[in-house]
Figure 1 (cartoon, rainbow, N blue to C red):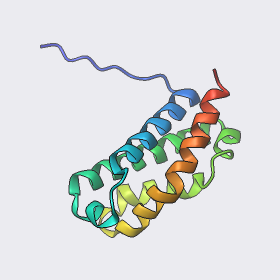
Figure 2 (figure 1 turned 60 degrees about the horizontal axis):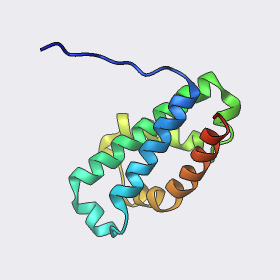
Figure 3 (figure 1 turned 30 degrees about the horizontal axis):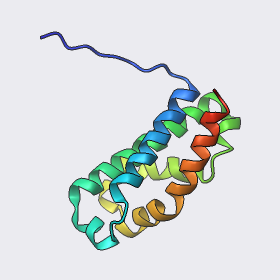
Length: 121
């Protein structure tokens, strides 16, 4: 069986789309979920952390390619820093911090990413 490897274009619009999709996935996966359920559900936690890693990496690429777009995203530097903690400091992740980001930051970032995508149509 032949296995295909398909690469997405490396451009800001693609990375914004990746960010928006990851944020949507986080939002949908945790909708209506209380913090205690999140704490116990290792699969959801792993999925959410993976999506935050994608968001942080996409933002890092946007920062290198188009800094003016990076600057339009609230807390972009902190999100990239959080990505680094997720990747390199996996053992110090605090559920409360991730949960606060889900509740407070994800809705704002969803709106911002959608506006930035809309401006590129």
